[in-house]
Length: 523
Image: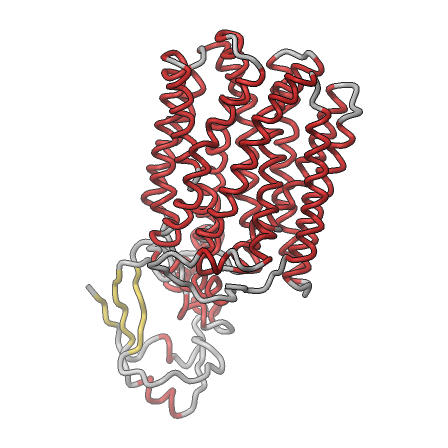
């Protein structure tokens, strides 16, 4: 399906054509432009190797080369990729639609769509977790659970999570993040839907379903990390992680605020049914719009693909075997990441699982008030996650070494929360406590531009597997801290001792990180 114009075309007219004047200084707009659906692609028949453009399409000046081109016809072919931007511009200018033209040519880069969908699924991932942190308060009253057993129920999510981290990371390296993430969302949405049924059936059923839920969610972070490393150039990667993790933390806010309302109006099953349905909707969109690698995408433009590939320090790789575990564990930078993940998860899950209980126990606020006091810190953390990513990318663009940037970000991410938790021991009002927790969580978000990105820095070929190893160690620490908090509260009647232990862990890990972490490739 093609249309052939005479050889004596507007390209070689002696008079400049006003409809093509906009190309006179930028011929590459016509050559490199792409759009989305059908394409009428201009090409020169029998064209020899390209020569340098001197003026443009309004009046070419290429000596004898121009004379040879004048004898060749200008052919327009129809392809299935999209109408060329240049053809659109020319046609719209001839119709006088200058204002509408800009709207037609504006395209959202595909990598922005990928990070938006990842932010949404990370939001859902955390919202599904938090539902149980709120619903457990009426469940504990109904079942007569003690504080120590309440910690066991809270930690049951982590029993499955600890096993899926390593396996999920290795599967991501082998099969790609898109497929593994899709299966993870399908399974954890099913587990979310089954949670209220399991709670009504028996405690054992509840623990089993929550463990299965954790097993499915363990693939989320390795999948996110690998997908972003493939879809974003190095100088944009921290911002992309910041956006995704902002969605992750926003999930806490949504879960903490919506769950009490739905519990009071629809019963325990309401929030679980809602979030599992959202997971199914996301899964349908994900399956048809995202590719594992930008080179496999049907929608990406050539210019965006070039930008992504040119901005990567390492060539894309595809592993068909598991990397040697002994090699990964033989280097101190690996242990820096593992210890950082342990400390991060220790503090994070203590706050995630126990914040509503903390406000209710220490300050005697009701469930809805506790949800609001708990939600505010997570909401501000969503904003600080993006700020941390932008700050990290800005330092890299300014010329600071990757090692220095990672150390700065991680130090802020640990020292800040440590100091805040020590101050929390002296809070006398729920407002003061909420402010200190907000500061702690906001500053802890800088860790994502530290150890979380550092995994891709030191081991780009086996990042999913290394992420799984460190995340499994961090998950074990989260289990200990979540259960330990319950026992500390039951034995001592106070959160203060455990907050002090957590602060000390932050400080020790910061020292180890600054001694042994590196931004250079190790494996």
